[in-house]
Length: 435
Image (cartoon, rainbow, N blue to C red; front, side, top):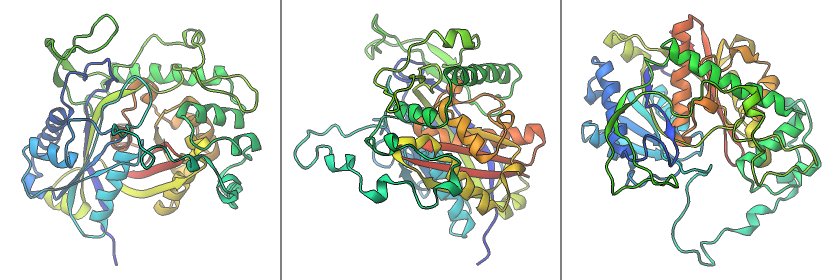
């Protein structure tokens, strides 16, 4: 069966607010996402709402506004036809990229012709992926057997050295696989012998590049300005829902700190709770890690034949997909095998990649992953990354694909890679080709 070419017609997002204490705290994200969808459709008037066959939502934490099928709720609020189908997906941090893959693959096999991949996340002050608020009983409490590993799960995979250039030490392989994200970053830093200075320099550059990109107008075609209520907080920083703030226009990522430098980052203490199983220095800090965020992303996908019939000028053609697993203790390395899969699917090698949008969950995982893939860092996140932009879990994946596609058009380059690690030990990657 001949597969259809799939194109990214357009991709947009909201600015990203601080989790629990930022500009989107007092805003319903279902209504805000509906505004983003409407803006996406208004930017592409040749695409009739009746052409949208499916809309998928990537979400992790289960924001309270996203009742029933969250994608369906947003579709309805955006005024799309009642006949538009909808689904929700949770692949943790990779949720909206997974949603984009699902919509694209449906188009590729001819099951549909046009759809929207959506990502929405509302986060708290600490990194986490939602939870079940129901009372705990002996059948709903955490299953302690999940912390145990058999030999197949514990030992390095038989093809380990086809993916990685270094072994994973026994002290990490023997550690608890139910592990916090910051701990995995420390584990990866130790495996590759990274220093605190390397991580802080990477983080400072993320803020520098993001600030420069905003100053140059690089995000004006991507970020949709939204009118939102400016939240009112009490002295402890808690939102006061009984008080109504003034209306403001929110149009720039809130965690960007233009003046950040290596010296200021060097003053930060290591993240509490992180340990070194190898008895090394703890080098993971809030400064060289992504923040927690609220945000929205949306991508409009279509078959290339349909786009040409309509006279559209899509941003990019989607040519490669990849999802792969790694040990949970080193989840930040997931983009290495997932990108190798995507490169194989696209039929190209890593040296052909001109631009990369690599989710900066932690500086500690981007640096060694790019080294393993043979991708120079000067091709990575040229307009800044998630350490400065933010990482609203379920909304990041679609942003990465859209951001790298916009950058390919701006720079006149050919191939782009969007990739990210995923909690619990996975990676997900998408390769796009400029039209």
